[in-house]
Length: 459
Ligand code: ARG
Image 1 (cartoon, rainbow, N blue to C red):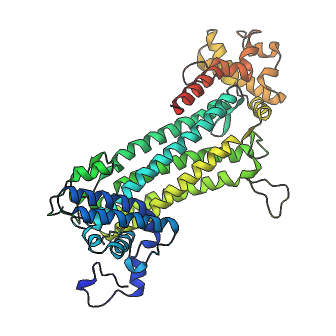
Image 2 (cartoon, rainbow, N blue to C red):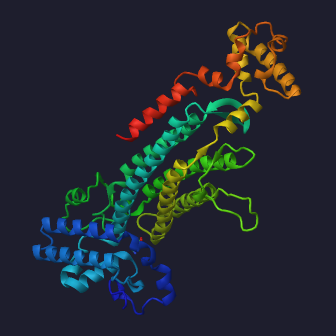
């Protein structure tokens, strides 16, 4: 079966190797539904514009319905001889309905067709991804609500800094994912523009009605320049950039889960179904899922780089280079979808080991800043108070105890401004409760933020 769609001017068929090298059916068959949807809208517009007869339109609809059944039942055999999804479907259609199938491509080119298909497909995927982001946010916000008063060390430089609530830490990721969701929604606006009608590059001589097609396909806008419409893939790059940021956020959480699960920390445990054992070390329970998320973030960033370089320096208008947009885009979507799905399940199965977190807070002089603030509130300039506390910490370190374990008289030897009420600020709980303002880690604030998110997420 030679490719009669364009082979009329050639003396010899393409070589087997070139056919394989240039064909895209193995991967772009994934666009079949979008391709059929686009073709049906195009055919209806052609009919409304008086370019295609009612009979032809009816035949095209019937043929496409059969093709959809064939795809669903798996009886449609995709053929590399027909190069890509567009020509495979068109040929099946023509086999089924005759000449009407050959008229479908009037006023259209594969260049505007493929650009339309990818946008239709990606638009749907963005909607699925946004729902998955929100489900993960819900899982994290619920965890935050449950553990609003669980103290853990907050770190800077991975050194114990100040006590924070575990819930507060979870909500940091809810915020990041909230921005990821916003970016997806924003990017969708630019995905949701219709190239169809640009034809090969310059538009068409037929009296097409692009508004009609756009309405049928639920496109928000119509691409206003035919050369731009068929050639740019910036919308795919934008999506992959948003996906990369999302994966980077999840890679950060993954890194923390991995560290927290190591017996040295023992802050959390992941459910066994997200971990694997070692074939040689019987004691091991490895956090494979977060490790793979961390690894797969590299893969998505790689796709972003690939797409950027694919687009770079391409002259207008369409170039075959653009066929290379699909595999990275498909893999980005699959990776992000799988990752979000598994992550929400995994977070719903996390065990939070509150005692271990609290014990770690007590080992790192996490309330030193609280003592410094206490002295400032009693009139000592902050720089002096910093110095006083540093000496007290050094002493406690030598004694091998926490600041709160020092006797009042000992503490007073560093500053006579210290009184009995100092112990209230030296406990991790006192430290948390003291940060009771918008964005602070006090359990009251964390509960309010978790409630705000949960309400927004169920809207
Ligand atoms: N399979 C092609 C792609 O993905 C479809 C467009 C082909 N256009 C062309 N002029 N060869 O880009």
